[in-house]
Length: 500
Ligand code: NAI
Ligand code: MG
Picture (spheres, rainbow, N blue to C red):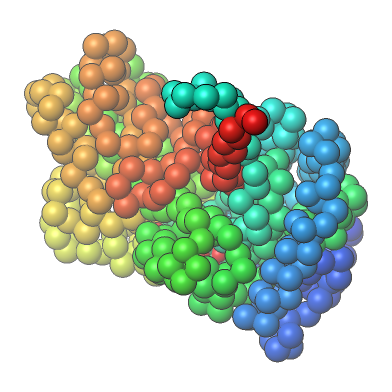
């Protein structure tokens, strides 16, 4: 398997100037270094080289950012009428589109994902998410109630912004995770302290410039860079943050929920997954092979919805497995910024080590490595796309979120839907699942039995801004996207009036 290193075009001078410039955090209207003076390295995962340094903030910076956000929500932001706020959010979406080259390049440079996925997928999706929520700003309304008590009453509800929100996002989709959180919070009228992941702060910092260019009042969006254990933990525990929204590991989700108990801030969590991919005997094999491969390998498997546990009918198992293996072997590995790359590196040395450790555990547990099974090359953080067969439900490759380009499979031999659902549900997670079949009855029966926030049929990893996304069980609390995300960022107030 060859990895191409020589085909990365030179950075556009504008992008190079931004990456190589001095980075600061957006607090109120100011760009500031960390109060402590500390910084952290941003690394190109295709070669392990340091490409930039950003401030490593801590509690003192969180205090400042929260003050700025509080001042903004008590001041200009809450005084703006919805139509004005909607216009600003729409303008921000236009600026995201206008800066697609910059944002896509930053996104792929720091995360390692293929540039086409950033330019044609993630960045346009980011803009679309802001536009979708710009449309909601003028449509967030309360209700009037008809009262049962005797006498004359007028009762109604108001939907008010929850307040200052802390948003902690991961590195796997740095810009769309930003949009999923920031856009509905802005639509609801909240102000924001945002912390991008330490691996991928550059796109978020550039986004901060666009927020300023769009003309948002100062303090509406504040962006802090730094480590989760410092900045993130201080946000989760902060007494003047009203709500924390988090996407990342289940382990850190638990820490955040615990830290939030101090002031009982509202919490929403989008955590890990271990999506079952169920291929029934009648499935269109070509479609299932293409879909299952992409479920496992898209974004180098670094997706909370990634297809990781394949249950494939025995009569097509060998064909499906060899089809997926063939596709895995044909993937072109390379740096995210090489336009020919189909599979980039994983984000960090730590993730690469975690993935290869889990693969080795699978091998030691007796699973069969059909293809891949190791690091690719010795530069950067590449993992060979891997297909693992003969897995058992007790193996760590089946139990733990691998978050790498790894498909694990097991055959089943009769289409007892209750048993299939039981096997699919045999996990602490419940984020997503996919079913591959044209059997309408089986689709609806299985979709009802599977305990997960999303069930895809003849598709996988399909997200649309209109469709709520989130987890059952230990995959999280709450739903992002769609109208439901507005629930996360609004409080309902009941006003009951006895008419004199
Ligand atoms: P992580 O959960 O540690 O990091 C995600 C975000 O949380 C980052 O912004 C990080 O700075 C922040 N964070 C870390 N510790 C924190 C703390 N104590 N308090 C507040 N914020 C904190 O995830 P990590 O370590 O990068 O990846 C480990 C595993 O987590 C992955 O292998 C994968 O299984 C899972 N993960 C799941 C994601 C998803 O989309 N659901 C995204 C990223 C990771
Ligand atoms: Mg971590």
